Length: 148
Image (cartoon, one colour):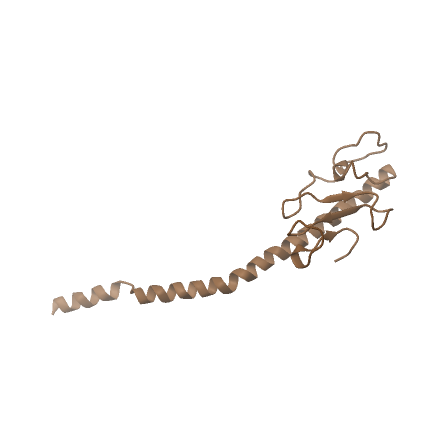
């Protein structure tokens, strides 16, 4: 009698292979459904961060122009917001609190002045996730002359 009870107790203590497979299947299904949604949120967060950074650059460039009378040239680039370019009078910077960051995908922002779209304004471009001009969705360029 005691032997039968100990046999039953031993069976109750362990987890069967079937139970483990059911749990693993549930976890795999959950991961398959949730992971793509989390990744798409990460991509949209990068696009939002790039837009915010471009807007921050444009604000700093406006302050730079108020002080100096002109925007930095293409050669001077965005670095002129952090360090005084040679032969620039009335520079009151730095106009940004930290070094010029790279875009959320790890590439430098492109700066051009005078711009091609509007020669009176500077242009700042982030090439998006693919690093190529043009594109759609998260691969689309983030540009300073469009409010998106």
